[in-house]
Image (cartoon, rainbow, N blue to C red; front, top):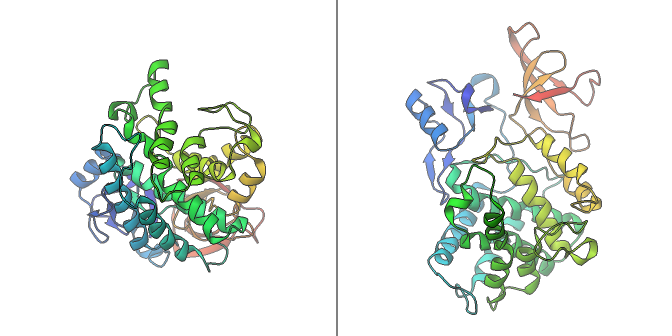
Length: 360
């Protein structure tokens, strides 16, 4: 399969991976042939990337770090929890849902089970969902990234569970932000920004009332917008004053937000997002955590279409864990623009004169 921008999709192209609704259910299944009407509808729904099934790349399968059923169960749980919180006008002082912590420990337990035992875990996002599903899928993505970091840090089971539950629920306070502010395409006014920034404290208030959620998990909600240099909110904490769990969640949050399309901008590529994180080292984030995080990110995910410095166009068929910026590329089009008679692969780790110029 091949990952392509929606503007490059033609009528008759077949989906190689499903497109998901906000609750995790399938909107369009794999194997569906897209019509012009479907393509325009997908654009209207905020979908900018799809996976297409085609002959020369049919054996190229992106390796998602957790199983589809694990992700679907996590999205469904967050979807139901968010709905229950939004239905309650006031949550301060009482529990939102019985045994919320137990429920989310179970959900995160399945995520960790998928991650444990995998050698050289390289994270890349392959699931495609409608724009309205951003909040739910974003929380799952952040939890997966946090789980990878927890394993890399050598956390014990209890530590990983506290981190994971906090990562799944770190943005629960956004349920108290007016919907029109969340979807606003223009810059927020100072008063609107104050309203949005309250979500960190709101989330903490919600989670700390749950008898089976630890205060460390709740602090992921409270501190995920604090910054290493003290410029964050709500308390302006700096360096070691910010709990490491919250720092990990913050890095995962920013990375996934940058690589996701939003109403006010296009998505950034994984390589651009990583450049941003390194530039923010020891200003917004602890550089040691950033370095560890980036060791587990696929800069050019499998199935990504790329342009080489020679003018050749190909699809990433495999990653090199020890050289994430130099993948294996299957060449589909030569520098003169003509399709290759028989596609062949180049390992950029070995052919050092070649490099990826950009994603297409």
